[in-house]
Image 1: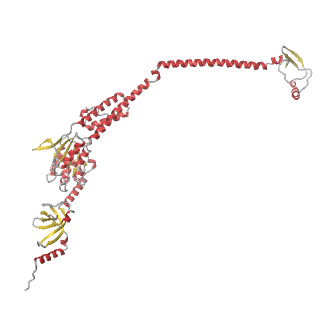
Image 2 (image 1 turned 90 degrees about the vertical axis):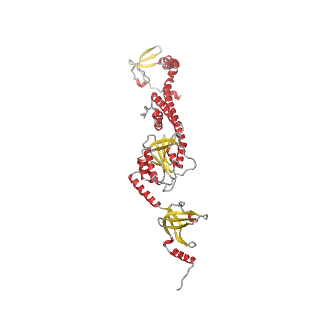
Image 3 (image 1 turned 90 degrees about the horizontal axis):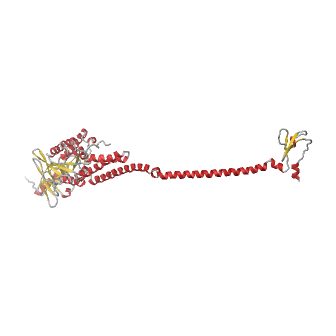
Length: 88
Length: 411
């Protein structure tokens, strides 16, 4: 159940963090833990939840367009044209 | 030699009648390319249909225009259906067009169906090969035209729903001969990166030819070998391309692809807050539970009021002692009363008391057995008579039976 509790939270993807948080909540709700175990899980759960919130609160994601010059790829900010388009 | 001479009008009419009587010319399909197209103010359309060597005039009357699937334009290769007749004023025969369709559509459909069948048999559409779309992507690649409405729709929808995601637009041509190769290259390129969670491949609506790049085999195979999940979003809801069948998920439109690619931020925030609540509630319950167990023990009477317990025991002891004393006293008294009652009865029954009143008690002798009836006596028996203050030994001389009791009741 708590197989990933050793991994530093900052290295978890959002998906992994949410999954682990769900697992922790489920075991806390099952209520057959010792106080030590419960407190340890609870602390971990709080950190996971905070980590998820930080990821979601991140500033608006970047929109970039791939550029290619003589086989070298680059990325520059992209702003889709408003209004007139060639409709495809 | 007499000559038969016609007017121009007569001869044109004659030829027109000839043409009109020919059954083949009444409804024919002609293939060619449109040129010199003019739309008259009346709404009728005039154009020339040509091929490499020849040309023929065509007219499409306004009332047939609304049935067309497309608006004809110069350079289009078409099949026209119509009747051939002669325009008598100009002496020119022409096609009176009833219907028109784009040339090659049938071939495209056939090619489409054939490839669909082939790729399906090969397993490229197999559901078990389809990869799940990551629920919380960090970066999405959008392979499409950078100038179309599609890219704008996708970006708008994605960022409105889930602002924190990064978007990388990979620009490609989405129609024309170069499109399939570019799309293939773009798909292969994004698969060389490790930061892309989901690919949206698409374009806005268009004709079958305009969407054709998405039916090309190179595109289908590039989607197939992509390790990153691909959402296809080609044209409108009714358009189905090979790319849609191979893709891991088909979105009916580019905007819909945006919706399928990312979750709603508010839903996730809600889910997170519910998880948070459950986390703290769960911990609180555990703490309460443990605390309750401690409290239960601590609050038990002995622990809470040890003095009172002792007092209570003492009081209880007192009560029992009192009760014991009371009941012992009562018991003695009762016995005493019983005894005196019995003594009185005993006194009344005592033969000594009877002897005091002048009666005597008679027994056999020497065995002192009480004699209460003459039946037990015979003449000559030795008897002893007891009085209040002594006894006398006597012998029986005579026995006489009397009925004292009955007589006394009769009296």
